[in-house]
Image (cartoon, rainbow, N blue to C red):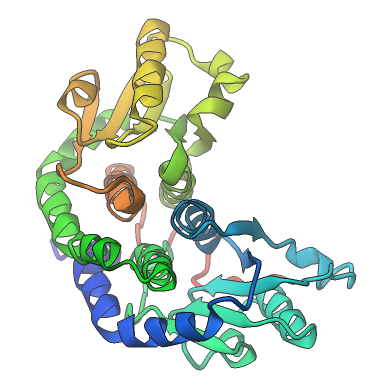
Length: 346
């Protein structure tokens, strides 16, 4: 059987990230040099998958560049026509297609107020790109599957590259250069495990948990599961989950936990112990053997993964889980019912 388009695009991701780093590094170095010192905080406008990339930006730019990052409310710029003051902001738009009018409206308002504007997109001649001062091209090539995969990881890598260049951090850049190889290693290790996803063929709901840098990963994996498999998949930080939603966990309730090494690993370990006590069905994504040993389905990550870059790699098991579950249910991974590749909202 020939591979689906989605499978092909998942497999492309290490090459896409390498191409982005090779072809956009000089551009990002130039634009960050021009932007440095010209803003006090970052405001990001995005929707869907790109909004999950914006969540990652809150952590990477906050931790490595001491930048406060806020998420825009596009309806204020379109439906209400009452945009807030953007004084001090670097206004950023993230959109794979660059065609959603509400995201364009935020960038246009940023320019109207005299603020610097930056766009991250896979279509450098899109309306969004044309509205901005600076553009980072994701270099992902045409993405034909409805569910975004390579443009998501490319968006994360573009944000990580921006962070490195803003900080003039050669050591961080060297870590980023290792990511394509770690992505390939992850994919190679996961493909043989996919038949085990058949276990979840009749799953109709689940929770996906992450924290810190991988808060974004929980949201993106849950979105892929929803899009591809029609499963009610709810994302939470581990902290938010314990503030109420944990009450829905009963014997056999499926919970996916993203728990690579890093500052929040102890928190994720404690959460996993709680899930064991509650009898949850545990799908665990980690580079830690002791964590994986507690899983009903273990989805391993390679060792040596820097925490701040782990979201670029940790999302891959979730993408493959969604692909395998869709196939187990006889659903089309390339064209989920009710969805279109480009969604334009106002």
